[in-house]
Length: 67
Image (cartoon, rainbow, N blue to C red):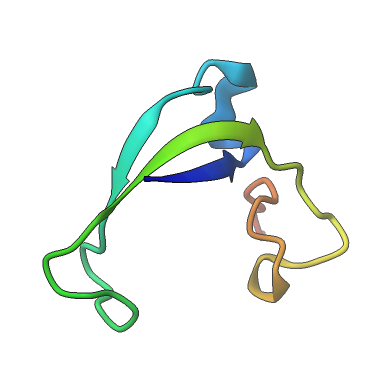
């Protein structure tokens, strides 16, 4: 079992703390071992990093929209 900090959208103001999630690849198999998954326990909130774009490491940033 692994632990993880979640983004604001998933952390739900602490409601997700202690939750367990099974994570597996569904479509993109390039970085996955076939027929495997991992189990994560939510332990913390990971704050966004507004200095980085999502593609450059700001993976916990809130979603953005483009018009």
